[in-house]
Length: 427
Image 1 (tube, rainbow, N blue to C red):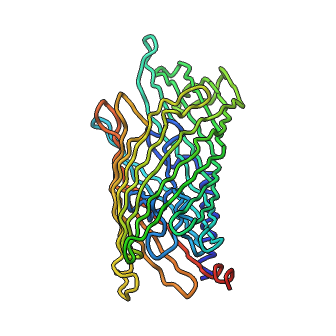
Image 2 (image 1 turned 135 degrees about the horizontal axis):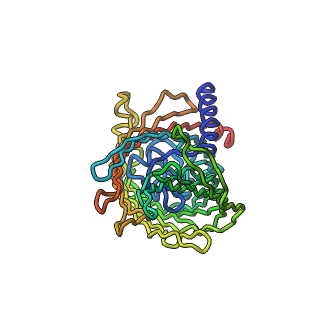
Image 3 (image 1 turned 120 degrees about the vertical axis):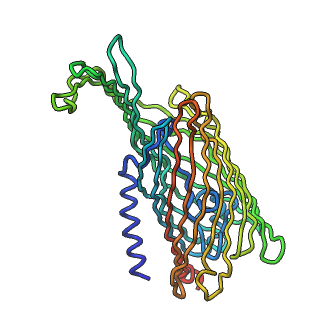
């Protein structure tokens, strides 16, 4: 067990460093809006069931870290560690043109420890958003042909610490204190077809940081035998975060060997432009109906007031978002000797109306989700599971000359439950 824990810890340190320093991990033109392509803090075992979070407490026999609703922390009775990553494959299509690409990224690291029989503290690091796009738009200036190239890269991460506790037999509450941080770079280049002409490039680099506050509540009631119903709500405070930006405008031209000459002249430069970014209120409500350690079904609905998102005095031009997820999990027999009867089988579906609207068209996303939870050999005090999930979906449309994205995302997570810390505490 010690060797496995050391391996997982080393991987955690490596992935944490990667998540902080990595730049582009996505390739979506829709990531240019707002703070990038938003990444919700859900683990692979939740992604596989439609991204459920509001009513999730302990989906199965293993303790689970549910960052979406901190009220769920009150169900954690055992020290829990979870770490994972994502591999994404994407096809972008517009009219009759298509291109494919892929990326891999860190997805999460989380640690939870019980602080009593009905409370726990949780810490974690998750991606918050990803920025990565590059496309070209032809145009003319006077009689000269020019191409406008738009690109961006970067990403934001979120570190958090949370606490949840149970009040009485049915009610649990919790809260997360988060810190969002990272860098975003956006570029606009005008490239003339005439190699003798001077090209221009505008660069804007922003360093983002600030605190966020999430909260949640869950109400759980036994219906009959091992069957129970959990109703949940989670949201955030819609706080303000900081943005410090620099802006650089330069000229350049292509050399005889078709390479960029480098900056020839600086047209303008500014730095330490400080503004406040108004973050939106978000709300998630949902339920989970479950038979302990055997099956569960549930649904979530989430709303985001992204129309209020603004950078300084400039509204972000986004719309309110809406999403719904439905899913379930089935474990044939958690006590069976047959391995395939102790595996968790998961299935779900998700629909999202994103905050983005282009050419009078709402950009929506749909995905079919599925996955498995594979238990690993355990001992008397430690339990391990590998959680694997897949999302097959589409975002955008070919209508109105827009871009359609089709994607397949693979998520994998390693879960460790260890009760030795708990045993020492209560002995």
